[in-house]
Length: 349
Ligand code: KG4
Ligand code: ZN
Image (cartoon, rainbow, N blue to C red; front, side, top):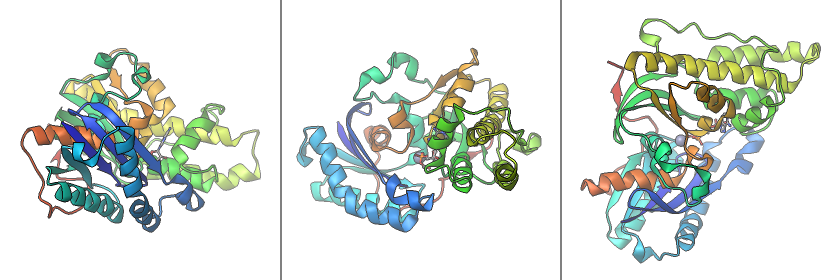
């Protein structure tokens, strides 16, 4: 079954064709980064407008790359939650129109669940991964969903069955990277820029605080506003008397603490659930220091999707969509978008 996936939840306009839930036939990701860079963050109005302008061409390119015609598509899957409402509506309306015009099955999916599905996909370029069976997780596993809008540590028992263990109580992990980069004028998007700068910096140059969120109900929760403010408050001092430190030192010191915050909550979850397989997803899962720190733990099997499947992409939408479709599930063409993370089971045990 060839499923057309559509993803427009934030600033990536993406369309993909995936066969039988795993073989990526094409995956086109058009990024809007240059349009949001002048504002150092995603401007929702620009994002939805660009999606409206691009969605037809992006879908056409996905079909052309797959050497398929619209009549070859068996079903349509689309992200309808969570994300920027206006952006979601563009992809959702387009996908509904496509499915209605062709009279084929249509399914609307949650893109956070789709991030956890990403490692099950076979990339077009298979050289990207060395061993596909190493890459594929068995359920249950722990999920680490870290993006610009969300930070979720969860237990996944199936592609559609997750229990949220912890979340951020304030800023998302990616948001902290983006805001620090914005204040220091490092560039946009902040995560990728800081990751790169940090490679040439001294992570011990500044000692930024960890949040004191380690007890009781907050064992798996994270907080980034304290770290973000500490780093931002450092800026005047930093500019006045550099003390031999560089921008790269700030980036490396911030990144070290940001990753440490995630790992503390994640390792609490590992300890309490005895699950040792971790699947990471979302833009921050591209972070090289996070990958390096997790790789140090021989007792854990950490699965990261290839870089182009870490951020938002339509292949993971088509892939997870197929799983619902083969169970006979369909969405109504009346389904609407939702900006919020859906009603997952809360907390563990
Ligand atoms: O999942 P994603 O593409 O979009 C959503 O937010 O849904 O994630 C984007 C986020 C941004 O905050 C970006 O700064 C961050 O992922 N990011 C990174 C890296 N690459 C992207 N954060 C840390 N290290 C990276 N290498
Ligand atoms: Zn995402």
